[in-house]
Length: 179
Image (cartoon, rainbow, N blue to C red):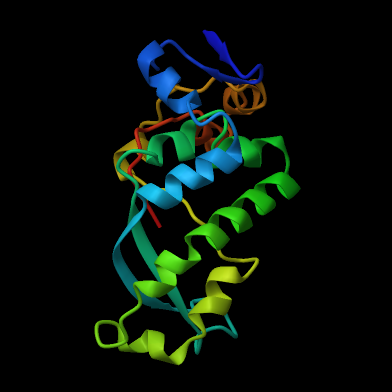
């Protein structure tokens, strides 16, 4: 196991070359700049609310490709998950900063002719909402057979206790698509 940034550690399954790419941004603000320059909106849909009291609501969902920066954004020591790992407040702030930076691309991609349901929603308010989030497109095979790519001590301890979310947290799949 080799240490990255002191507390964000990888197992031997993550190559030295990949670790260098993951650590390249140097800070979360630089990571955001790279992600915004790289992000391409490749899909959108309007998802109806499923929870009681929200069934009349519509949520815009965007699919992004980040061909060059997606892996570092999700798995790097200066990435989104590393910010969340440091604490809930840091994670929420990181999510809000990333979504605010991506908002012009997200909102600029909306075409009510393609997805008419989005004409009924304030997409700007949706993207800026505290409940808005960005995450990878979950891979069923990974969820069924999680890998051990990260060696972040708190997650390892919880995974060893059988906590499924912690086992999944140890995965660092190469990522290029986010929602």
